[in-house]
Image (cartoon, rainbow, N blue to C red):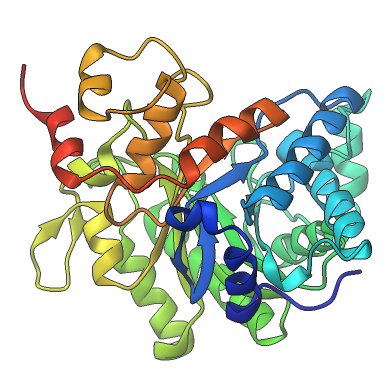
Length: 368
């Protein structure tokens, strides 16, 4: 079990080892964090993919990427275990220090153990219902739970998988999934209980900061059933723990095909006006990590010519798509799925570049 956590001094020392990537590092939660983070969602739950991920993670960590994003359910826990194996190897050899690397994980979805069991229902009953981890009415849509008892189990599982005694960022995973089955008042009660639990774990030193990782919640109309208010969540954190709360991070999709973080005016602002999710996060001092920077690979090729005209000097559409995300004001990190060394090399080719100007980005939003 690796002790300690990411620190300002550790991440700064890490960044200083890569002067060729000077444009890569930016302040996030008081630490020097790479502007491109390695995501671990995609891929089969098999040994071949494990080997690919471990090779990619090792190259990334030794080449200048010090932010890794995962979740306990990604590839049925195998992604977390790959990360843990590589971290153990590199810290054990002295090539890395734990305090140099920012690790983010998530809890909320049910996960199997490495593979789909022969009888999933019986497995679920044995591992979650019989031990009392999930009770009646607590599971939503057959897949999502966010009670303190369940999150405690998931956090312990993630710590064990990763071989860590502390996770730097811990997300409540797609909490808006609950809104399809329960009323908003009950939802906010469940959020409050989850935040109370996460504050306790931050005080205990099991997590550094917490947040919510969403898919639809922050980028839909306020009238949409799955809508989440950044101001409302922050207010709950304040009520739970005061101004020193640990609700510090949000994650949402943002890419050339899903630009709502920047473009939709759906969030209440402190001045009682309306603003984009990025504007609201900035006003409330929240870090923003963008998921799906390549829209799960669908933006890696075939972009319209205007993208190349706006984001000049890049070699391919994958680089242009990543550059768009990491250059957007208010985005602290662009998360990119990287399960091969080739993916890592592609991301590193962008990481050291200066961000594109805001004027260049705005060319992509002008009417034809």
